Length: 283
Image 1 (cartoon, rainbow, N blue to C red):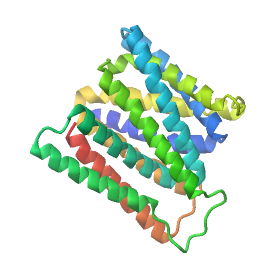
Image 2 (image 1 turned 135 degrees about the vertical axis):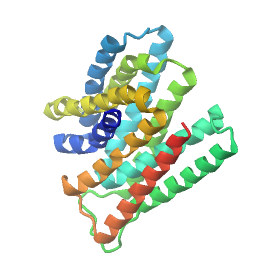
Image 3 (image 1 turned 90 degrees about the vertical axis):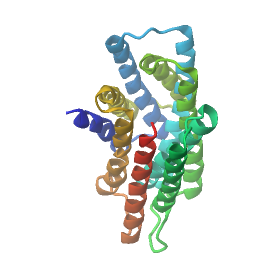
Image 4 (image 1 turned 120 degrees about the horizontal axis):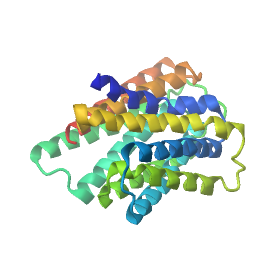
């Protein structure tokens, strides 16, 4: 039962790109809708966990949420530029690399030879996986709107936003269960800042609230599974969601890939998962 609970975050988080793709709308509408859905979960978390919300927790949470909004908005931008099947595994791999490096350099998390060996191995595996998922077949026909330059820029900014989103919380030492509501408020504020001039309100924005609810449900069950099976296994299983988003976008959303590109993406996605599992062993 505990393992099944731990798989729920993988399903929920892995479905975010697919849900937002089906809901449609601009990156602004997708981001704002998603953050409103996350806000609903933030309110629920207060009712469920009864956390102590201090002014410091609010400050850290809102700041973290603002950076999350940067990360998620830019990820949506990348999805539109280069597709979900490339964006998600590359973005996931880069997030793991950067947050791991932050943990090592800022928080000195690798303290033994075993940690250094496993950690370095995981980083190499992740980087190779990222390279594979981003490879293209010269014989493939670029889809309409394909813009690799914009996609790469968006992933870089997305990675910076997501990394700071986690580093700020980790460095503050605040209770993770207390951070949800302040964080979700920061997420909504960030989304509104991005969308101020883009007229984000409308049916697509409302429909994308479902995306935020999926994210919130994944977060909730992540915390429910940790006491039963530990952070390492929960963390590793959650990363397997990239299989859903990567191959779901090809099978359900119709992203076209050649046979060679399917091999690249399959190998790359599996390497990203293996790298995340190795990192999970260090948690």
